[in-house]
Amino acid sequence: KAGVTQTPRYLIKTRGQQVTLSCSPISGHRSVSWYQQTPGQGLQFLFEYFSETQRNKGNFPGRFSGRQFSNSRSEMNVSTLELGDSALYLCASSPQGAVGNTIYFGEGSWLTVV
Amino acid sequence: AQSVTQLDSQVPVFEEAPVELRCNYSSSVSVYLFWYVQYPNQGLQLLLKYLSGSTLVKGINGFEAEFNKSQTSFHLRKPSVHISDTAEYFCAVSDPSRGGSQGNLIFGKGTKLSVKP
Image (cartoon, each protein chain N blue to C red):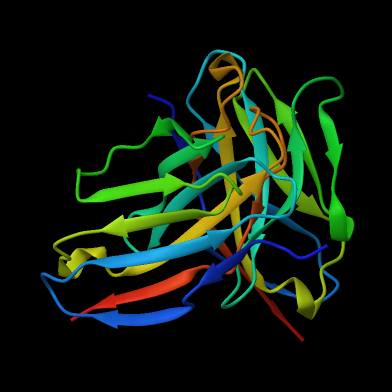
C-alpha cells in the first residue's frame, strides 16, 4: 500500500509569492491533516479535512488555506509568502480521523522563502 | 490550553545503553498520548500510543512508555539502544472530547537522541 505522498518535496519561493502544496493520502483514508514544522515553533497543526470539509483549524493567519477533493487528495495554499513561512509542511492521513486513530505522515514539503 | 513539555532537547547515549526520553503534559483531563519518531529528512512515524487501559504501552522497535496520570507524564524508554535509533522523538497529546476529529495533535518540541558507538 502506498504511503502518504507529498509534492513537491523541495521548493524555493520569493517573498510575496504564493505556493500550493499537494498531498495524496493513503488509499481509503478520508481524513487529511496539515502541520507546519520549524526549528523555533516545532510542529504546529494547520488544519484538518474530512470528506471535503474543514473539520478543524489551527491558529494560523488567513493566508494559509486548504481544500480537499472528492478523491481525498488535499492541497494547501499559502499566499503572500513571508520569510517566516519557511518550514517543512507535513501532511498526515487516517481512515476516519477519529481522535486516537493512528495518523500516517508523508515525508513533507520543504519550503524556503527568500 | 494543553501543552507538552519534553524536558531534554538532546540526549546523547552510547550504543546498548538504556535510554529514557521524558515527556510531561499539562492537561488535568483525560487525554490520548503518543510518541512519534522522525528520522532525518523523513516524516513522522508512530512509535506507540496510549488511549486507555494498561499504563505500560509497548511500541515498535523495542520502545515502551509508561503513562502516569498523577505526574502527568508519559516517558519513553528503551532498555538497549542501537545506532539506528538516532533520530528526533516527539511526544504528542490529543483531547478525546474532540470526538471524531483527529485535530489537533499538540506536539512537544522534540528530543534529539544521538546514539554513539
